[in-house]
Length: 206
Image 1 (spheres, helix red, strand yellow):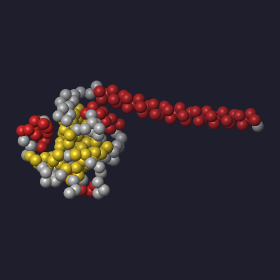
Image 2 (cartoon, helix red, strand yellow):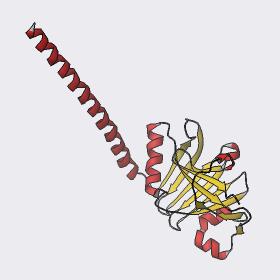
Image 3 (tube, helix red, strand yellow):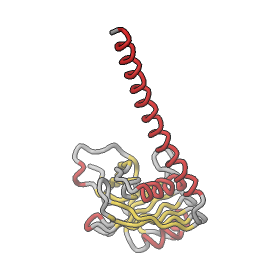
Image 4 (tube, helix red, strand yellow):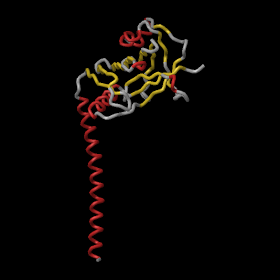
């Protein structure tokens, strides 16, 4: 009886060790895949286009093209009333979003505290497209003040750059500032990069 008991204890111990090793192996494999994806992305060309999926689903809702040499990401989202075009111009330090439903452009100064670097955006897009997994984006909540729009002039366009000028020329411009999520976000518009970085644009309450 003692021999049988000792044998059972050894089997249980071996099974426990096997589960630990399997778990470590799975974690290591996943980490290795992510490292490999990072290496492959760094070897990509200076111009890359990615397919973007709607957050929480596999539905294709837009594309993003990264111009590494010009430090610009160009995003096109076609999703009904949520359709938008967005320019991330890291060389100038600004993001511009054109909301088709509002026929206006919204300008946000890039802050590295909550806006990923261009290389990080490219890496995330490559990872999501390659892994074919469903992701939810990190959201940045911003607000604008209605009735305080301006039309771009030579000084504005020099500051914002040619890419943003081409996107927003002829449209009212609203400056965005970061804010906290409102109690009722239903009136806020969605833009940004689906499954990577959401821009939630809200009108400032008077």
